[in-house]
Length: 95
Figure 1 (tube, rainbow, N blue to C red):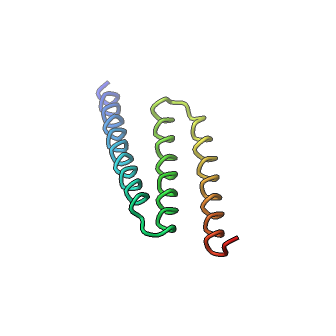
Figure 2: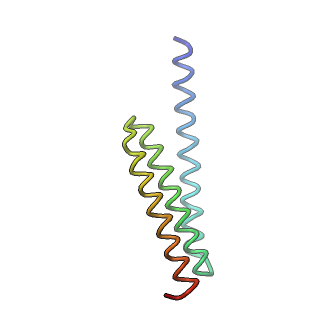
Figure 3: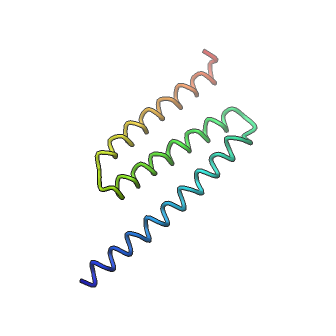
């Protein structure tokens, strides 16, 4: 019984810490997006925000115990990666 209570509180503490770290990452990403002096800085900030969104979806999946959301996070991460590659190619060659 004590082990179950200890693990539940550890889980809650981990979720709270993760939520705070995700929140600070979102704030720092938005700051970089707004004040980024170059287009590349803004693209990196958008990529950071999508990575943080994937982490947020994974945290939501854990909290809701609906692990189908992890598939959504995986697809969103892949689309984000392809989007960043397309923007990088556009910036490099000016298609």
